Amino acid sequence: MQVFTAVVERCADTGLYVGFVPGFPGARTQGETLDELNMNLKEVIEMLLEGGAPKLEAEFVGTQTVMVTHTRRGN
Image (cartoon, rainbow, N blue to C red):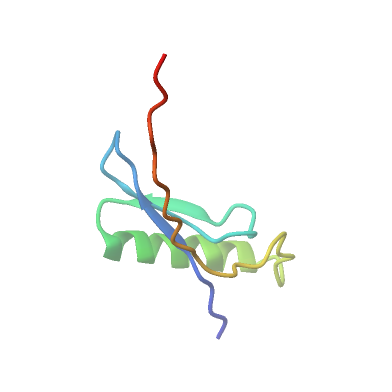
C-alpha cells in the first residue's frame, strides 16, 4: 500500500472540489463532494501506477500560514 498526500481546493466558479498530488504528473481530478473527490483521486492514482512506480517531480513538504499586513499607499 502506498500513501499519497493530495492538496484540495474548492473552485470558486464551479463549486467543485479539486485535488492534486504535488509532483505527480496527471494525478489531478475533481468531485462534487470530498468523498467523490477521494474516490476519483484513488482511481486516477491507481491508473497512473499501472505503468509502474511514479517518478515524482517534487516532494510534498507541507503548508505554511503567512500573515501579511496590507496598507494602502496614497496617491
